[in-house]
Image 1 (cartoon, helix red, strand yellow):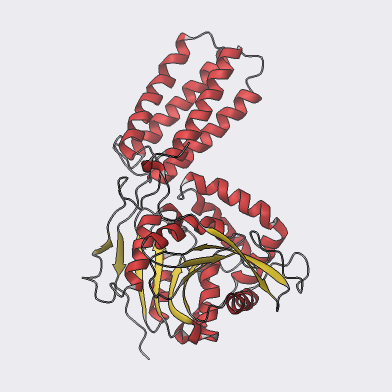
Image 2 (image 1 turned 60 degrees about the vertical axis):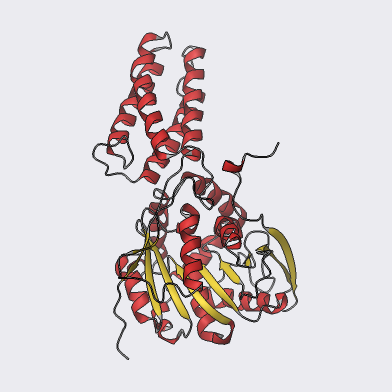
Length: 419
């Protein structure tokens, strides 16, 4: 049964392409989005981050294609559906230089002589390395969440920041990351982190000739605003945009805002943008054709919060569900009330907690309720356990189905370094 238009993902579905790369002895898998508009444009290549693949770049790829761009997102060797480079020892976690060699080999095999490159996190380090070593192949650069911030250049400092970021991302990204990390393998991911965390990228930034857009989500915990400005300052032709309400993976949490921001940059519209600080891309809206397809808007979610909290604080007292079941549901109701009043949505009074954090708290509550129904509540009446499990599923579903608007994207004034 086809989805209704309001739930269909925008843009074309990705095509799966496998390219033989003889110099590596690997068939590299890539997701591609031909725009279908017959425009003679330089393609956009999306580069994934630590332990990830092209899978989490799908929302951005679809929307850029809908805006008329040909997009490709390779799984670099050892990640996603691309096998590991046989010339590397197990576990084969590459450093930035080696991943850049993998990228160049794939570009040659795919017949891509020149492209615009969008890199997220470690992908931005690869994009910078490519731009310095092969400037003739780079039309423009987009560095989204560029790492590594000098204050986090040890694996034991950087990875906790990655975990902190997850509270500010939309809940569906959490599940996707678990699938990605399981596919990559912990050993390979750790080795990649060790080999890429202490990368003095600031020494290469002044040699980047391509026009570059630096993007930071306002809630990004992997890099500071000071580091984002320093990256931009060191680039000969750089500009910085901050996406409000987004974190490290703004391209996933706010794909509509990110796609329009990248498209505006590629069209040269940011070169003559208005005063710094003015929105260059507006805040996302549920009715936008490029918006994320999540059917529960913030106002409806706030109403559900109020109703759910009221039910959890009152209904258990009237049911013969057992003392532990009643205590558990009442406690979750009280915690939900505090969370609701503090969240930045229509039901919030103080509005200190960003909506994505609120959604992640709900998803966490759902998992805890399901676990409690299966373990801690054994021996309690079955009706109460079923009610707890049903509430857990409800929390998970509404957290994943709720729309978290982000944006606008604003340009931030950064003074270039004097030559």
